Image (cartoon, rainbow, N blue to C red; front, top):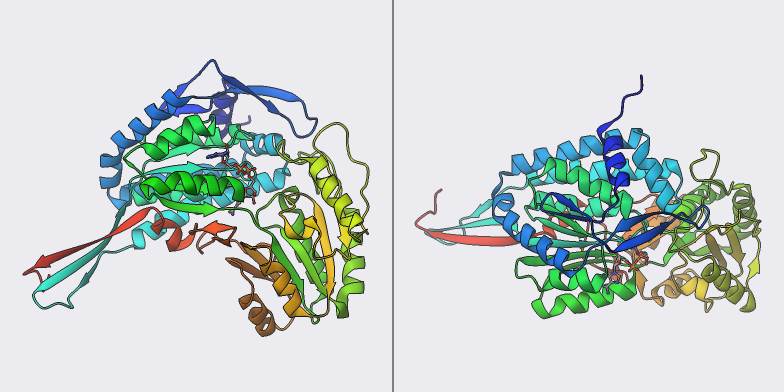
Length: 492
Ligand code: NAD
């Protein structure tokens, strides 16, 4: 007999009557519907009810009402709720329905969808642990007075997320917000909302009604009323640099705390002493993870002339061996782009680079038709001025250049203005770390394509945003420090 896990049942309930609106613990259906397109064939496969301004205002009211009780709940109680959510996410990662839904909506491989749910569980666990480790400090520096320093919940948190990781990016924001004691207003992406709505439903099962309220809808209808609400004190946004600028401007009049996790253009440096085979494996992950649609994807590959010939041949050969196909099929290495991904935009980037002097070294193999497919493509001898080298590619196109002057390669990256991730491959780790220290980046992988870890801070510089997620810094993003000076309490 097969048992149906609770997350499978939740997926069933979400799919039975898809809605993007859950306010005060109740799902709402609306007359406004949005079709959802399957990446594998480009066809609409279902639709979801979306909310409007009134739903957003109701959500803000519900979150504000939830604030006093949730912010006053003992840390142990909040931590227990987070761990219960983590347990369900772990079970879901091993289950059938939720991973398949993520794959169906985004086109990412099933194994990566499972990995995303497992990573989401870690965010909830890490934040529960960090909350319990936080302690009030008492300073006795001033005679006769004790200064009590404590972290307090900032207020209601608005959480706005993209489509490329529709569960783990919301988890990376919602877990610390809830740990901190902040009720959440959650606007998922319109591109892959169902996977996010399963998370919303799961959270509702473990939290008091109104602690997490979700509204999918037009940003102006949803986000504007949230940012105007007096109890909303922090907005955590992940998405494009363009929209991040709009969110920062919208948050400015009320001086809201902002966490902005934006686009990237990560340099990938292969040093002269690199182990070529290891560097190729590292780049396969750093470039083609999530079908190339990751903010930390390697975008500018700089290979030292000493190893360039062997590295490029091996990477091209490895790329040509990648199996492009149905992301539900375990044999596939690369699936289709998500519905927001635009194969024509990628084709233009490749053509533009070729016109500027680059050469297509990896094949642009035929891909399934129709759908949002783009074959993994390697461009070599890419000139610094080509758009594919300066802008976020966000697809399975690898742009490679040979360098003789490391300073020039580092300068080329700084000139982009982005500062999210970077990668350095080299056998002398001290040298690699010295190079890493010169990069403008919030996170650097040395001989690894997976530098991210929920217990450590992650955040961008420059055009990649500001603020941190993960680690104690990710929790503190939703907290305000309060110092209370108590006269005559010097020895307590
Ligand atoms: P996007 O900026 O188009 O959308 C992100 C979210 O913002 C969506 O929920 C969207 O509905 C909402 N939005 C759109 N217009 C808005 C407005 N005017 N006001 C408020 N919200 C608005 O991004 P996307 O296409 O969903 O995601 C891809 C981008 O996200 C890439 O640039 C990628 O690098 C970036 N990203 C960054 C990180 C990171 O951690 N730095 C992680 C993942 C993705």
